[in-house]
Length: 184
Image (tube, rainbow, N blue to C red):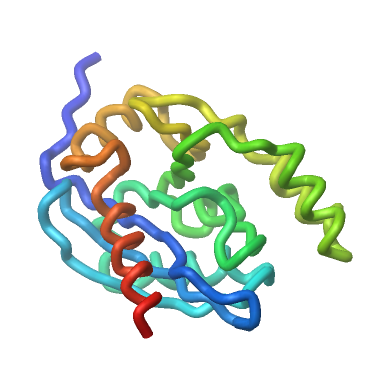
């Protein structure tokens, strides 16, 4: 079976802006892209640093103006604003859109679990959630954890949405916008 993905496939990339240890909130940035060249929307949502509200805020972001045009949700990892863990399954279930967490290198899961045990009273809940996600898999020089999409289709979409980086352009731009907040 031959699959075809249009050049302007709709995707959104979500990353968080840098924050200080004393900050109670962190900022999520979502950049909606058509393919790898056309930015069609930028979204912002505040989350609690180390909270458990990133999932609901990501869903709110997705349910906005471009919901019907988004084919894949790309996340910069699974944690935002410290250890605010986004639930890949819940995002996929409530939006009916595939969710892909992009990771630059293979994470040290044991180190994450140890940090959660050390710093959080609800560490068991957070660890359970992390362990429920698919194992990171290497695709096109990046590691991904994905829900709601087949591997071959994901490979094609990653290719269509990259420009000069190994990650989809929507994620790269969300990251650059976030870095701009360091200057405030």
